[in-house]
Amino acid sequence: MVTDINLAKARRIAAEVADPELPFLTVEDLGILREVSVEDDVIIARLTPTYSGCPAVSVIEKDVLNALTQAGFNARVVRSDMPPWTTSWITPEGIAKLQSNGISPPEPAGMSDALFATRVVACPRCQSEDTEKVSEFGSTPCKAQYRCNTCKEPFDHFKCH
Amino acid sequence: MSEHLLNTVLQIADDHLILGHRVSEWCGHAPMLEEDLSMPNMALDLIGQARSLYTYVAQLEGKGRTEDDFAYLRGDREYRNCLLVERNNEDFAHTVLRQLYFAAFMKPFWEAMHTCSDETLVNISHKAVKEIAYHVRHCGEWVIRLGDGTAISAERMHDAVLALHPYTAELFEIDNNRQQCINSGLFPDSQALQPAWTSTINQIFTQAKLAVPRDEYPQTGGRKGLHTEDFGILLSQLQYMQRAYPGASW
Ligand SMILES: [Zn+2]
Image (cartoon, rainbow over all chains, first blue to last red):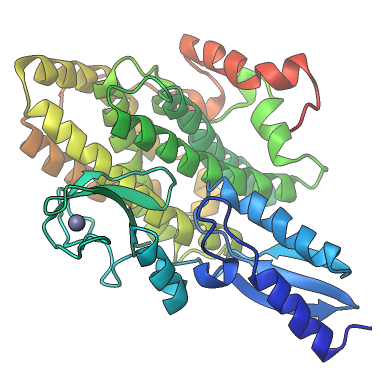
């Protein structure tokens, strides 16, 4: 029988699982852990993928399942596609962690579809707003590459999605 | 009805898988490091979307086949992708133009899908539309950069337009399966998306100093399973592992 206390524990264990590509961020920080519930004594963890083709998604699902199983829970991970994830689900803690790990967080203002559109993206190291986009795509689907013209450092920008 | 829906979803699933595979061929070969990252990222978007679509096709079919069975274990005549997406990469100009032609169609397609009545497809559309918007921007910018670039880049862009434009008509083709889906409100009317597509392409071509070719002969057949010679070579690479080692997984 899964008690309320156990459910809270299961939720905590699931929430602490880290993203394999951004290991300083947990699924909680990313906002992709939608719900942890109980059905017929089985813990159900609902996760929403970030990008359709993000290779980290299946790894994260496996990691959450392993973490719950190792803690002795009978668990299942369910993919929940609707509503679709947006970067606005990243928690304030997640935003702070991105910043302190040298990744400029997504702009809440949203992304313009206009060609050659430029947005002000502040350098996560020196906060200068004199930066330039190097490429729309970075090391993972969620990031773009920028360069700071003030401190001359390259940095990743978490794209608004 | 579900037969029509299955066949029509299969068309767009195949479009995404085949284009995703083509774009992935650039991995390790792109002209610069930034593009070596952007190409596989776009391929991942497309293959991710294909996976969702194949999973739905398998569910509609209800015969226990999986996304992998559809991706890896069919013959060439069973693929229903349009011919545009299977065209060879050739050079970077061909690749970014092919991607722009496709993405400029899929963006309004997914937007129109938001108000259609199939819940699974509506869910997929909300995710895919954000991803495809990047493809329009990124590839549109490259078409302009190359078209309005050096004499050589402009010539290559021009050649790509001549080679690929005849394949764009098939994007708007409506076969009986799709017509039934459109009539039932499950799919957007592809013809109605033509003005949006044309406007995107015209806007980009104007900036790129490229002309839309006239007097062309539309090339179609993919929706009926009639593919180009290049397609067999693509499939042999795509399916090699599952053909040589059936059931292999890692
Ligand atoms: Zn800086």
